[in-house]
Length: 211
Image 1 (cartoon, rainbow, N blue to C red):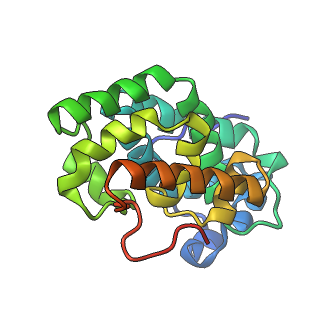
Image 2 (image 1 turned 60 degrees about the vertical axis):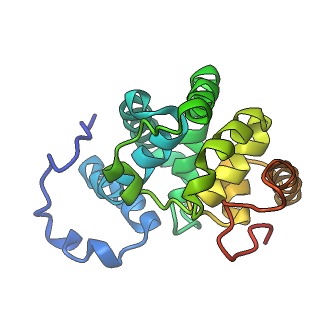
């Protein structure tokens, strides 16, 4: 059985989903293994955040495809989800990160274009919905240039924490790497940022992201 996942285009009348906001992601995914339509609740919870994250990394033109494919892959893989993990965000962002990696050149082109023009391709609405933690707008142009030069795997960790609002542990889970490896990649990325931005780190508004 298949399910078509489209924003706000499915039935929410199942009586035992009335308390869906209090159910964990794992609860919903477990239920969806018997009733696939229930996976739509995961889609509703996280589509905007995944779309916004993809848009900030690739631009609005590719975000629709990446976000839609993320949830289709997740739906197909739901039987393999680790139900011991109540929060599905690391899983979903991991899928999205793999898809974003296919568009490496587009991502780097976007950052370099922003570094030249300072004009963001993402709409303001998308930026508002995603958990963006850049608090130094005046540094956006320079920051974009630095992001283009950071190694892909280091940038993945940095932006999962700074833009997707994952903890470092959650970022390591998303990428399927040891926590120590994630910490090393974060350290390299932040060191590169600070070197380029004069010891400031606009991805860390008053918080230590190396936790």
